[in-house]
Length: 267
Length: 187
Image (cartoon, each protein chain N blue to C red):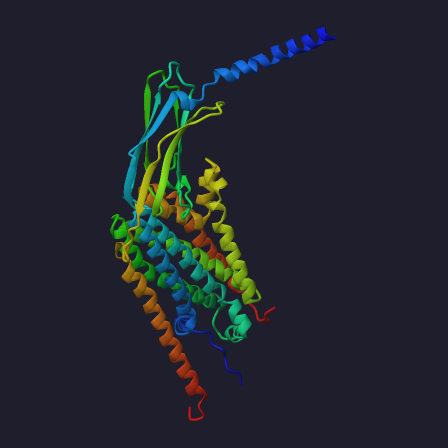
C-alpha cells in the first residue's frame, strides 16, 4: 500500500515565507547580531550629529548643511548595515552548516530568499527609527524637518532595498561569508566612490549623469539638493529613477538566484 | 689693441644701457602707493563674521601699473596654523591701475575658524614688478565660544546609543542565562 504524498495546501505555502521571516527576525534581533550592528550605527551617528551641530552652532557649518551631512551619513551607514546583514544571510548559513537542513525542508527556495530579504530589510528600518530623532532635532532649527524625514524615508528606503537585495544576491553566489562580505562591501564602494571624485563632479555633462545613474550617489545627491540647495522635490525625479530601478532589479535578481541554491559545503 | 678695447667697452655699454634705464625707471611700489587696512583692531567670537576694508592710494604723479591686492593672515605666536582660505574664499582682488592721487577701496568678509590672536595685512603687487607695498597690521582677537548642547542635540546623542547599548547588554545577559540553563544537568 502506498501513501499518496499530497502537495502542501496553498495556505501552507503562502505562510512558509512568513515562517522564514519570523525565524530570521528572531535570529537577527534576539541574538546580539542586529543590536550590535545597530549600536555601532547609533554611536557613530550620535558623534557625527553632535559635531555637526557644534559646528553649526558657531556658524562654521550652515545649519542646513549639517542636517544634510547627518541625513547622508544615516543613509550611508544604515544601508551599509542592511547590506552587511543580507550578505551574511545565505553564505553565513553555508558556513554554519545550517543551509542543508533548511534546503531539505518543504520550504521553497523562493520563500527562503524572500523571508531572508524581508528580515534583512528590518536592519534599515531600525536604523531609520534611530536616525529620526537626530534628524528631527537638527532639522527643527533651519525648518527642514519634513524634507529631512522625507529624504530619509524615500531615498534611504530605496537605496536600502537595492543594497539589501544586492547583498543577498552576492550571498547566494558566495561560498563563504568572508567572500560574500568582501564582495558586497567592494561593490558598495564601487557604487559610492566614483561620484565623489572631483573630476566627476566637475565634469559639466558627464558628472550629473554618472551621479544619477548610480543609485547610491543619486540618493545622496537628492539629500544635498533638497536639504542644502533647497531645490524642489518635483525637480528631483531624475535622482529617483536609478534607486527605484536598482531596488526592483536587484530584488528580482536575488529572487531569481534563489533557484540556484543547492546543497554544498563552504569553500 | 686699445682701439679694440674701447670698441668692446662701447659695445658693452650699448648692450647694457637699456637694462640700466629699465632698472632706473621701475619705481618701487612702496614709494608711490600707500595701502591701509581698516579697522586696526577687531575682537570677535569664534565663527562670527567681520568686514575689513583695504584702501590703496596712489601718492605718485603717474598712474600705477595694474595692481592686485592680496590678503594674508598669520599667527605671529605660531600657536595655530592658519590657512587664509579657511577664513575667506577669495584672498586676491584685482583693482587695475590707480590714477595719480586716486584711491581704490576693496573689502573682505572674513570668518575666523579657530580662536587666538592673528595678524592680518594686505599687500599690493603688480605682475612683472618685483616690489610690493604692504599695509598696516589688523590685529584680530578671536575668542572661543562653544556650548555643550548645541542645537539641543546632546540629550539625543547621549540617549540613543545608551538605549541601544542597554538593550544589547540585556539581550546578551538573557542569552547567557539561556545557555547556562541549557547546560545545567537539571535543565
